[in-house]
Image 1 (cartoon, rainbow, N blue to C red):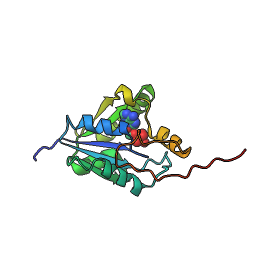
Image 2: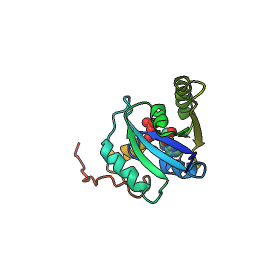
Image 3: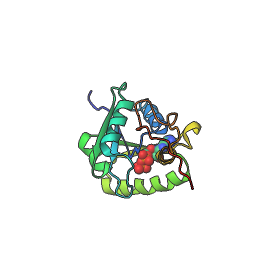
Length: 167
Ligand code: ADP
């Protein structure tokens, strides 16, 4: 399709949650194609390997032909330019996300220059997903809790043995 509207959804997805998935599904009503871009964020040390995160994202969106999963070790805007994507999508859960996103948006605008703008479109998180983050999932998982309702079907975290230590 000529002039396909492509949006890139960058993140760590460590792991993908139902909050992330809801953003992708909402974005699909606006764009022809969404690329879930698993980035390598040098400030974050992931719990799950890149291969594992790619596998989970691919499985979670297997029924959506217009959702692609990619990884990139560089600037999101460079990836966008390389595939002709003019939009980035991000989720906003609250004021912390806003502060961070505001800063990144300015940096992206400066790097893109005036003639080559890539717009970031922000989705305010639906109430039911506000408290969900990859870090909450990791924390529950680390302590052997049940995270199955927080991650989409296809995100199968390895089962952990329950161990109770005596103190
Ligand atoms: P990053 O390392 O870039 O913050 P994340 O995987 O944590 O990557 O998040 C990717 C994007 O998804 C961010 O825009 C983040 O705000 C958004 N996001 C994370 N959790 C949720 C949620 N529960 N609802 C909506 N958006 C979310």
